[in-house]
Image 1 (cartoon, rainbow, N blue to C red):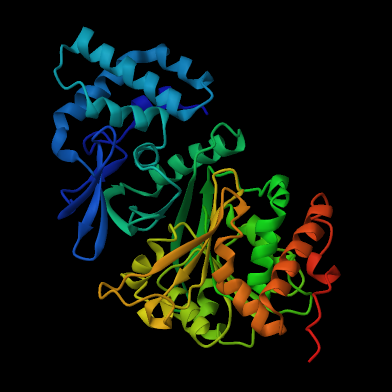
Image 2: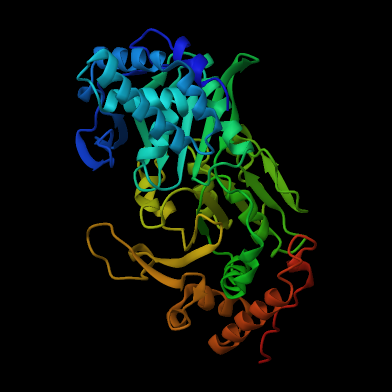
Length: 459
């Protein structure tokens, strides 16, 4: 990692931190972190994630920084620690000891915790990573230094932190990238950094990424043949699918789904990728192309991540009858309400086009699959609160055949292929056997090319 001792001597002067903290807090408090360091909630319709600056002052930060500078050669021991969480914990203990012994300061606590993240972590990025559970996407702007997060339950959230300038942001991201390359951590967080620049008089955005996420979909995913066969039938039936996963897991899992499709399908792929999905029939589109070309004659639209630019055109296409597969870090139960709020502002009638949700575990395996039931589609009784139902058809990677008796996947597939329900169940089992026999060769061929679906029953 390197540079901990140097950073102890070079931190800037605004309170001694590489980032500033404003007095911006949620009006409605919904969650408090385990260390009572970060709180989350809402202000109006906007999600808010705030560092509790009320619990320390400028003097507390200055005392903690002075204690860190007194550590000297003791900081070199942190360089050899394999995990940033362990480094932060040890650095905090060192700072607290020095405060108590040499400075006789009473400001032991959250101030030393924040300085420890500056020295041994990634500044405000690791503060958020440590406090907030679940897969996160952290968005940082090089221009303004503002930090925002996308949370699985609250959606897009503003924070009260911002980097002083791009130098400190670049340093934090470089340390994060070193952690990733050394494979020292298995947490779940995506960092998206936007550089806004001008080209031809129009502002454009370039996205860079760093991540501490196990991005490769493991071979064990193919050891879930029944769950994949169910999703295969959902794709053939033209259903709209939400994949709840981290951003770096999405390309691997979508490539698995893509191999279940015929070669002649034309699939649009929206999203910023370091390694685009290299499958025949996939057309990669940049963010700015989405608004202009999303209404082209695609057979299906795959989208990795969703933002204010892509959300409305994507669901407009779904309402027009083009099937979509959206991979986002939303939890399936909260996704509809998040998509209807700012900054996405998707129309409720368009959100109701979501039909199937897939949740991936931290290891990249299929954890659960559920189907949406919408009152607007007469699939469940109207409740008056805008609610909907979800029916779980797969739990812990295993299909619940009892729940499939009223499955919309089975019903739609049967209708399209003129099959009875028992015929659709037979098709599901045959596809599962087909995948099970070929689970070691998923990367070598297009499965959809080899499969011959059951023929419709003769009249």
